[in-house]
Image 1 (cartoon, rainbow, N blue to C red):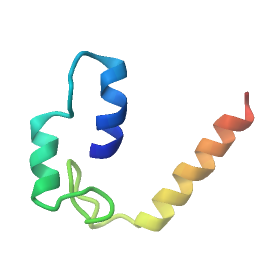
Image 2: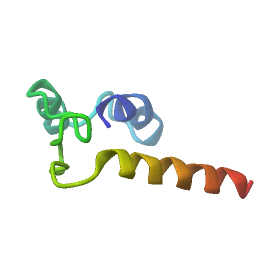
Image 3: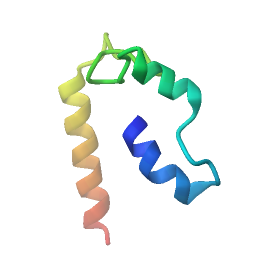
Image 4: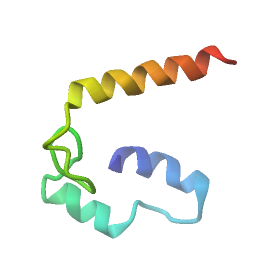
Amino acid sequence: MHAFSAFLFPSLDRSAEPPAAMGRLVEEGHRGLPSGRGIYDWSRRDGPALVRERVEELFRQLGRG
């Protein structure tokens, strides 16, 4: 999410970088789904299943074009 934000946020608003709180989480090793914790606690979720669902939804949406 941090890398995505660094790429996308400049197109969405005038911020030059992701929020400081997000940067602190990344510095502390809390990288979201890969580490099990970030803004959300992912430790009780099935990460691979979640990623598969996201990819499937992405392709469903792309197929609508």
